[in-house]
Length: 121
Image (cartoon, rainbow, N blue to C red; front, side, top):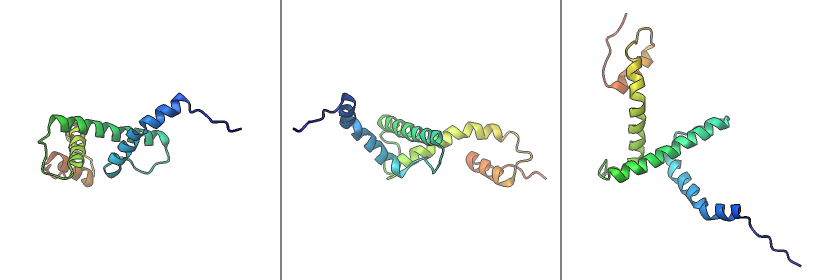
């Protein structure tokens, strides 16, 4: 006698929709904020940032089809621009008082803001 197992609704639903996860993994593989970590909450957080970046980039490209149209790496350029826009207000606030900061930090602030600060002695 052969008993045939029936798949549960959860298994059937997963099998129907798992292609979306494979697509996301494929799209985030080349440009990702993830890094090697043993802490699973950080891994989940970085995965969520990757997915948010992918979704935000998709919406942005649909609304701005001519943005960097002739470039090959538009998604990477979007992620760089997004990161710079998110960091800029914090860096501007930090640049108000650079006294006591190490030279590499001042150089990084100058790089983000695109301006030079006077050398403090």
